[in-house]
Amino acid sequence: MVCWFTLAKLPRGTGKARIDWLGAGLLTVWITTLVLITSWGGTTYDWVSPQIIGLAVVTVATFVAFVVVQRRVAEPIMPLRVFGNLNFTLSGGLAFFSGFAMFGAPPSASTPRRPSPRSTWSSSGPAWAA
Image (cartoon, rainbow, N blue to C red; front, top):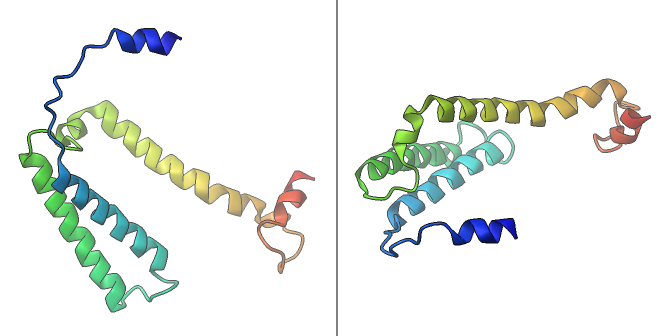
């Protein structure tokens, strides 16, 4: 109910917003290739394989193109001026490093509690809780 009353008082838009389709496409390609590099590199393909190197080249090229497009369009998806705001930059950096802590700590915390060296990570959960 509170949300409904609050949203009803917001000013209406003009409906003339322009969607940055090129920026959206470049952002999609950039993030997809970055995820593929981190997923496939060292497991499915060697780090210096043509597939990973090709993905790295595409990742860098689309990132550069994305930044160029965001500087030139009238309504960018990611306005680059927000990186000049110290609060935004610091909170983004803290979120980045806390992500490492959240995903890196559980496996290392359960290592001493594994029942045997041949047990799986999922079987160490009950041992950790005991």
